[in-house]
Image: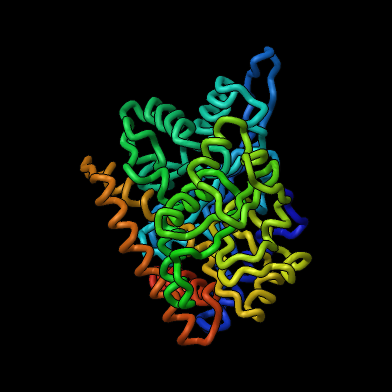
Length: 417
């Protein structure tokens, strides 16, 4: 997905300021929340398969830990920037707060193109990165997880590297691990499932029958594909999906599982039999009941927002809507479930995985999904009530809840010395 020149961290700070208008707390607390607590930049020399050495750049931003250990994913992407990682760490802080789980927010990123790297190169890069940040992560400090172009295997390498450094197994250092290494059942579908639960709640608010509701999904990776599959099981009709190569559209409805199988076989949803080709920009402007941006940030911008025809937007991606576009959508009456609520299913089940690791006690997938549903629907209703109370959008309602809880923790802790 192409990204605009919009600075994501400036977007995050603008959202913080919006919440602050309603919170009316001390200016000093606001200043604390505008800054990341710790920013680490690391150089990562890696021996490539051809014998050459390439030095990659990695980041770990630990934004705020007033409510608990830092928590946040690690992404591998050629477009990673420090401002992007800072923004994502801030959003993780509010997201954990909205979900009311005892974590702060962090994020990591390495500038690389994993699609052009071998498995061995990715392993050497990952282990180098894990060593470089090993002093600042840990089950009581900062717990990484998968994000864009990272997965359970990457988490396994981090777990192994960290455990070797410590001299004993430390399964709680990361979440999103393979099941065989202490991962949680239900973690791989958690982000999409949580967003589907939010869509169901939003459909009730909007009085849109979920059975037969038309859905377009931009970004058919883990979150987007699971979201589509689970919503289809709930009775919705998936009419369009896309990935970085392009998109497909069929007004009569796509088979979400067959589309995923096509993508896994050929590397893209493009070329799916019987479907019409569309661009990512065209997908965002398709007439549908529900639009789910599930790719990268800054997808819905001021340049294309006027063409958005969806009645409801559910943000599976982090920061997919710019503040300017957000205001237009609000004025148009589009019901938007913001990222810090809609995609919190991943971090909620990461929290459940962490708890299981600490207790060495493991739940069934049904138990995990039930706990996720209870947690995220409770969060949705709390945000909706806050939004109604102030007469504001769901995004502003979520920010008031999320920022407010963190601000209260910062204020209560005080400053020392």
